[in-house]
Length: 358
Length: 281
Image (cartoon, rainbow over all chains, first blue to last red):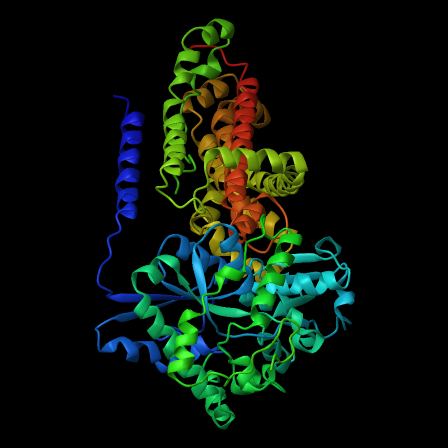
């Protein structure tokens, strides 16, 4: 036999043997719960991450504590590749839960990945435009013909192009360079790009004298803020509904503890030990009650934001089909948790127009 | 690393390049049959790919069915998106390749001809060549930014190494008996170079050029994966980030086809360059 052909058979055999186990799935007693986080965080051992209720649950070890008595391990995975990388892990069945932003989740849903959104975790998250201090860019319109860094495929990407498109600026009118946040900031400092769409990292750059903040989504229109959520895979929810309930209930407890304005200092102290100093996190929350930003509710506002995001993504050709959104939200766990913890009505529910529903 | 770039491959020119006497006959004879052996393996892979999508071995989101990839490929070609990106990538590759080729040839010739230059430069060059393209990326990004210059330099580096090594070894490998005969005939240094050394070293040098271009093409994809807003490598990243793996695979297909065509063209031009060789040389 020709050596090349023997090699071929070997490759075939290896492929078949690795593909085989993927198909065999028997329900097993729960030993580990795998949670993916769509950001790299900072540091290692342990990785530090802040900004949302999921991050607080992580820092406080809330899920670990809840499941310790059953000997169930919680395995957190942080993805430097953000939402798109979480999607890959979801498809490969390496995660049970994920904290992720709107666009990547919509992209996954448009591709038939089966998940349910079970709680809001980081709604109305800011988006900022950091520009070179001497660039003269003062508003989004000034970006025409400029080189702008954006982490494509993440929810920053969608919010950025949506805000640009609302001003009649198309992607072709400027040069959008695909860079992850860390590389984008380096590029801005090196004057390789004129501006970057960033989260609170924009304040960090500004405080170091490396950038000016020229635009804020929240100050412009709530429609350009970003939404993030906790989701569960359909597979996991079908096999372990009780575990999903306990995760949601625990997350609601954490959200409740920190939504209390009396704990505002405590909250920012915790986040101040993560990616950015306390002061920077605070700035993203200026004028915004904690009950609004830390709300776990899957209210009409959130649903409408995901519907709009899905439409925008489709119109901007970021997805090739328009996924159905309504049935994506599974409120059963949240409703049980709110009832059990007597927190119905604690967080303000907003309507589709972003105004208070009651 | 050196084996993968064919350094030091100072072999007699392959027989097919010397087959000048009756190429038509050879082509009609055993070569087509030989060519057939190249097909079973790719076809088996294609079949496996197809079966895996039919039976759902790998999630469709990760491994889209071949038919869909070919459809996407056709769509990208029809919309012009593929050609636009390919054009940008080819400009990058050939600019970088041109720089790498110039520097590589001069360096290789200098080191091949002069033991002094070799003694000075070769160890440093060897060390330099051991650092992969990706390893230079962070440093170069800070030095020259993320623009075209970065891409040209990294592609030039990828080209430089095989071209230099093969040129140097090719020249060193010119059989001594050729030199001796030329000395007997009283060749001048210039005649020695143009009539003996370079012609005898053409095959290995050209080999280096081929490897250089292949490496340039491979480096392109790596370079475009980062800090890019266009090009065929960018298409791959973008497709991945938006979870359109059919776009990724269609771009991979394009990369493969272009790479294959480039290499074929170079191999044909090698045969043409070496047409002066007589069979049995």
